[in-house]
View 1 (cartoon, rainbow, N blue to C red):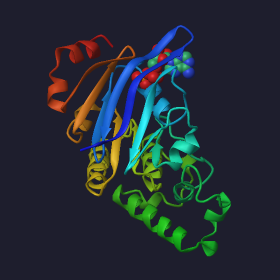
View 2 (tube, protein in one colour):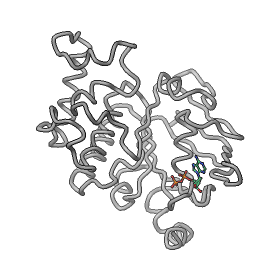
View 3 (cartoon, helix red, strand yellow):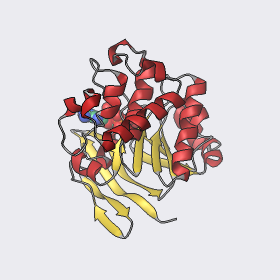
Length: 255
Ligand code: ADP
């Protein structure tokens, strides 16, 4: 399968800290790729480079969308999102005073520039908004969270906030999803549920790059894994190859 996303020799430094050094990874179209590594290994920095939050010091990021190949490093987050790439955050970025459903209808970058408060009044919903509400309700239902639809986010547990953050990403019309620790703090059944949904969406044509600390869960669902350590690529391969790689085990033990 052709690659939809390519990170080529990316270096990113912060003052004297080399957060990423000559890192290259590829995400095949319709792939589900994992990105792991001990704390401070550069995973978040890599996500920030791909999603437009950081400009790399060196290297390139390419997006091959259908017949169209373009460099996306240096674009801002809104521009990257407009290309069809969405990321979720390790720490949920939700509107805490709004309800769960309102948060899901306010997809991260707004729908066609309409006033966000419009989403709150169902009487003003157009067909597209009705379809979005339907999608939100379906997703909430899948995670057993429908009863929270009209609850303010500030009243949710951390685990539920985390799931809503991921569902919010899945609400967008993106083709490529960058999920930052979607299973963090989430109980096992919900975490497996989430990864099963990832596989289902993947079967429908969507691509995923996923950072996750819950390796034991994620490894059952990804096709390929990259391992970062001290800002460099330490290993890559199929999940079973990576988990039995001595260098990977040592890097984690040293964490
Ligand atoms: P991970 O997500 O794997 O835990 P990060 O990408 O957050 O790793 O961090 C990689 C390294 O870069 C760490 O040493 C971290 O302290 C440093 N770093 C990340 N972001 C910044 C920043 N904005 N300013 C300074 N240092 C940073």
